[in-house]
Length: 296
Image (cartoon, rainbow, N blue to C red; front, side):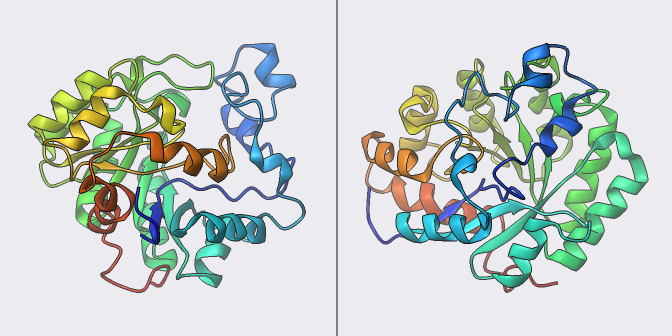
């Protein structure tokens, strides 16, 4: 793993504070287990028990930038919102050289959600849309008609869409994120750049088959410690998928940059893969060099 590459991290969070539990309000209509509803500090605490966000102190943004500097992360994609005081929007505005935004879309919102996405691109310089199919209420499948409206809007705006794939971490039904559902979407939207998030397990091998078939489909490593990267995905990156696998972390929501960067050198990527995995693929897919980051 080379040093000084200027890593682009495709999933960094900016909580409002160490006890930020905004996720619970968003998922409460879907959750049924008492443990997540009452005692969990994160939506998948059974998977991520030692959350770094609990140690960020009173200035999470400064703490996140310090960790990025420490571990060579040059730029990071953060969620941005339109509400006053949104921490992601503030980070993109105040540090456009370090952060670029992604706007989360609820397909159930119809036309108003699509207008909000357009505003986020125009006003915040958002570089992508994100969707958590299993986390919408009611749940909306990857290949649902409501999602097609989001995809069409992304094509119109010229931005990629990042979609959670595979069994979700929170205790929610997984059928909406079955990886096979991406097949029809790639067929119907050949010009849409689609990035699978959160592992695609237990269908990682299928994800690789679909990426071999569809060049507009990519994979990011979000929410997985490097020691758990699926072997099929690593092999794909080393061969025909060098341009379709990208680094994404999960700091500070569940993983520390220290753990990620300490484990990364043990991933058996070939030498030529590292620059593309850590930087170049993200720059291309998210069009990071077309304009100053975070500017409308």
